[in-house]
Image 1 (cartoon, rainbow, N blue to C red):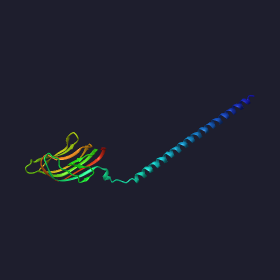
Image 2 (image 1 turned 180 degrees about the horizontal axis):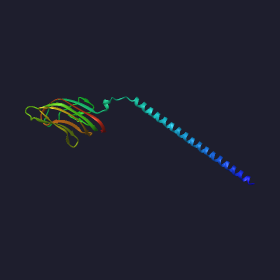
Image 3 (image 1 turned 90 degrees about the horizontal axis):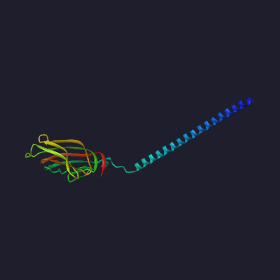
Image 4 (image 1 turned 30 degrees about the horizontal axis):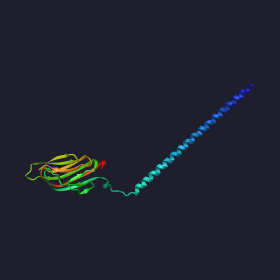
Length: 198
């Protein structure tokens, strides 16, 4: 009689172990199924992303390409002529995508601009030995000097390279404080980094 409870307890232990083993197998199988499903979803997402990239590249290659020079706002001006005291030098654009209207450079984008100005200025004998060359910024409200350089008769070369932050709807003009003759003035303006374009 005592042997029967031992056999029963051993059978019960064996059944418990078998049940635990079966439960472990079932949980392991479920984990593998979840992992396989995640791998399948991940692979599908990667293929969809790859297909979207290929479509984007394909659409981009079908569009006509625009030359880089059309995308960057810039102007280059050459001027030789007379300047009148207190009046803007009558600049006209030689090449570039920035407009020059009535002697003023019209700014259409907020941003950083690289400005280069080189040339020679001759004063008449009747004028003083010093003249000021001024770069003006005019907006809807007022006119302010961006840059001013004295030019001496003995050393009449002008050479300026500067970075300025300009706003849309600003007008840039160049003026002199005396009557003068300007020789081979080279004026370049290039938009480096646009922020807002009108």
